[in-house]
Figure 1: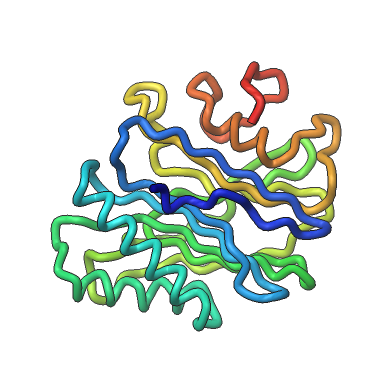
Figure 2: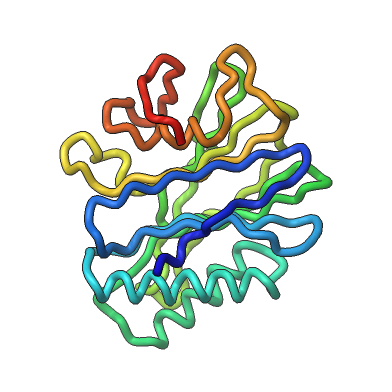
Length: 222
């Protein structure tokens, strides 16, 4: 039984898409897009070190902790700080997880996120895409007081905001797990008319260059 979401939130003025294609049956990658309250949506993507059953169990624990803390913490930073403490107390010293967790504020059209050693998110506006400003960030489960990258940005009316997996930079050589979760505001993209689901497919296509969503890339319907 998968812990990944079967459906994504349906919110007027926003559209969500996600894709995960595991390289192995048992792994430590996860994502989720869930409603916290009427004005907030939680978005998380994570990657546990190593593969196999121990990593899958650690992944399930990390996912459950993030979801639980998201329901009661005001900021993504506080969520990751508390989850880090829980994971360290559980004693799985040989495992850690990179995570990026964001909160989308629907009315204000802004997203806050905290990054624990994970890849930078990317935002797309029109035909351009680029990572957001880089700041240091350390994984969950390793250190008592890790440094997290906390940022906030306002979304334009036509924009894609993408969380990407750790495996993407090496997908060409290792054919590792790849997944992406995207959110954009408005009903269409300029010129390309790409919905988030197809952005997710483009990120997941091994023939697609890193951080480059190509409108002409051949892909199966999502």
